[in-house]
Amino acid sequence: MTTDILTEATGTPGGVAPAVVPTEEGYDRWAEVYDSDGNPLIAMEEPVVDELLGPVKGLAVADIGCGTGRHALRLAAKGAAVTGVDFSEGMLAKARAKPGAEAVRFIRHDLARPLPLRAGSCDRVVCALVLEHIADLEKFFRDLKRICRRDGRIVLTAMHPALWLKGQSARFYDPQTGREVRPHSHRQSLSDYVMAAAAAGLRIERMSEHAPDSELARRFPRAAKHVGWPLLVALRLRKD
Image (cartoon, rainbow, N blue to C red; front, side, top):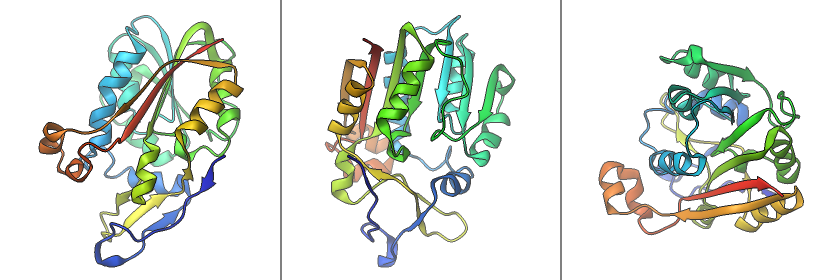
């Protein structure tokens, strides 16, 4: 079972405890710097998502928790019909302002509620770096299953739960105050993801864990302290 985040001062400049804020507020504030703060997790994740999704030209793709549209816009440019869903108006505003955004249908919606998409309407469903903010994983996975076609694929990525051992969760530094801010998260384990998928009637087709290497750390200095430590977990699910 997931448990709520424990606030820790670990890694915060000056020993000041991070500000833990409601998830929506956190992402509204993060939107200003999300695409430019040199996050190595994003650099690691995008090629993994592309591999797990496979070719998307001509397919209906739902990007659940689309944020600033980093996946949605790339997939639309590859010929997919993309719907992006997110509850952060700040993130969606950034997505809608980007070149190519007119090709994506963006919907503001709280992922704690049933998704506003028809059953079986999506060939591919991607949910990237969102799971730690979902309180009821089994319910959420069932809804992803509902909108996915029988022969479709569901691709999930998440911050690796091993980062909890370092006292870390999704976070950014407020550009106005310099203080570390953490959108509210739930402490999860790999077994939470596996068991939620099984309970929802989904089959894990692939599962992988990814750690940064020295080359990634050279390009993204924030990865240096995590070389060899898992930062990312990715899954591809299918309906049983």
